[in-house]
Image (cartoon, rainbow, N blue to C red; front, side, top):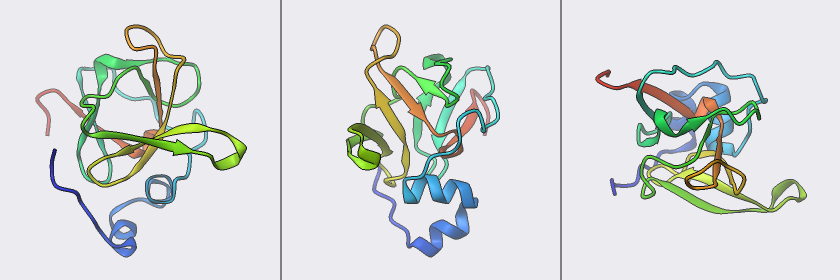
Length: 133
């Protein structure tokens, strides 16, 4: 795994849009159906904070929830999970293992082959098409 990226709150604020900061650094959530639809071409979704590869286009599916959903991470090493008991619910939070950015949550109601639904905040992801920069 790549070295951890640690920045001050001020550094994250300077780097990110206000919404991306709220979601990734303060564990916020963007409104459902508020993020632009992602490209359909092959590529990788990276962490908006540190650029770590998180999800592959081939694992993306339409969950009907209004948030980008994937059935598996690009690399299990780059995506971490922990219990989230906020809002009087018990959920599993998903974060970037490289910079600790909050990405969304994972649920056990996804499609085969994993049965998982990684429900991500679109603002936490940056798409890079295969062969692109």
